[in-house]
Length: 362
Image 1 (cartoon, rainbow, N blue to C red):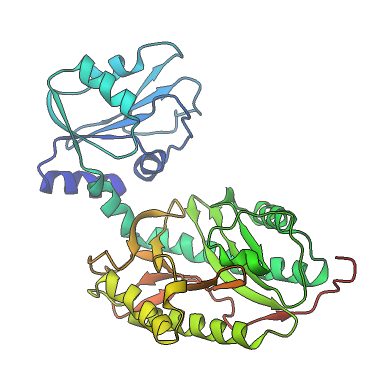
Image 2 (image 1 turned 180 degrees about the horizontal axis):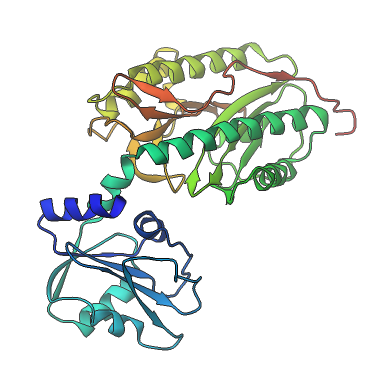
């Protein structure tokens, strides 16, 4: 189905051939997945006729593929030159992923080839999820809710350092049928939460800390992603105020999601709410990102994106306020655009959870 959608889009755009090099897009079109590292991996998609998949013979088995002409090469062989034999002269579309050294070699091997960037064709398809994809992403988010609950339980019963808690989260994903995490978990204690992309360290919990937990797994080829912020002991008045502001911004933005609404307006809805509360300069990132096979895919919810919401897009809504050297608050949900609004894929509570771990040994 995905391949048919791509060839229809190519036909409408008057594109005769496309070289797909993004491993996730190749998986999306064929079901075949590998991490090529420095080796050549490419899928040649003609608007009509069979696909040609260029593989190193060290890559995983491919015999299960149907309707695909597989061309293998050994390490040290001129793989790009072999690939050139399967391409016609003239305009050929490429995607953004392919390393430039492969492209330059291809242009030398086939001087009459005219490469053009049409990443938009496949990115546009991946942004609109099929019902099958949505079903997997719902289940992935349901499982992510469970992992979040277990991480918070561990923090209350046996709090470890940030790095150890991140490792614990990874273990939970492995135990719940995930292929891996979808990104490195972020566990930020206290002032570390004022850095939106904090790198986990050896910090331990302290009384009064706000804790940002940003986690996600890769389940059946699709990513989940969510963030919650909890408090250790009684929250300080300002922390409680900021939490309420961020929570209301999250809820207002979700309410604004509807087909046809420009994505920038959704960002502005959350931003206005935080601005009005006096914390606008501390909301330092876009409101959200698209998600699918990867945690961050093409498309975002930002003040610069005037594209309209479309049914079956899935993206994050994650407002945050980050007070330097003090604390941060972020609340993130994934939403799927529906005919009359959106479906929130995460169901873990957004009320401020307060934990009271025994910190006497910390």
